[in-house]
Length: 250
Image (cartoon, rainbow, N blue to C red):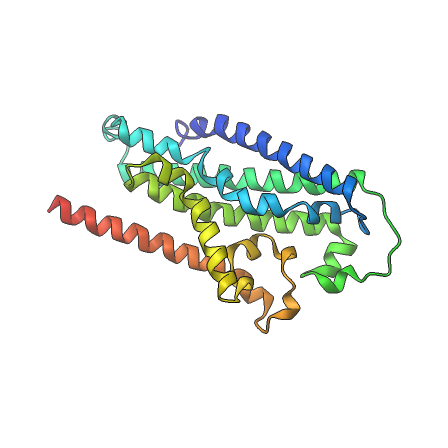
């Protein structure tokens, strides 16, 4: 574990800095061009781009590590010191940890900036009734931002897991690095076409983008469907590659 974590630190720092810069630009642009009723809303309104690109921050900085280790036969040298299954598990734990921290920091940094720079405006608009956890968003925006950022971090772990599985079995680096983003786009498109956008992974990641009053299903259940579906897909992909590998070995 001690030899694995340092490999992730530099990609983590670089991707997180890029994410913070992106979040800062989005919040500042929104703050300058919109009428904001509550300080936290500068952050809420600016999350569209982040909700689209967040899979990139879970795959590109980290998943290439396993790909090149396998390509360069690095595992032959580690096999004598540690069991490969244990080594792969530690790799996944390290990548998951940094993917979680990266998304959490990027998300919360935008919220903190929004709370610091945006003045309070008087408005008769009932923001609390329009958003999921609206009362918390209005009355304790920092607590809301921390809670939703933690949730986004967990979704980041699942997205990283998809890229990590692909890095084990795919020979194409492009598929490995862009697979999570492509999945997010396709899944969001399909759920929109079917009229169940409330069940998409993007809606779970960015619940403020959905008017939950239009859907009969409980929003708390809807938010779980996208992540659970991705977990199932990760398991199915792993199982397919595992079975194919067993057949090839046989």
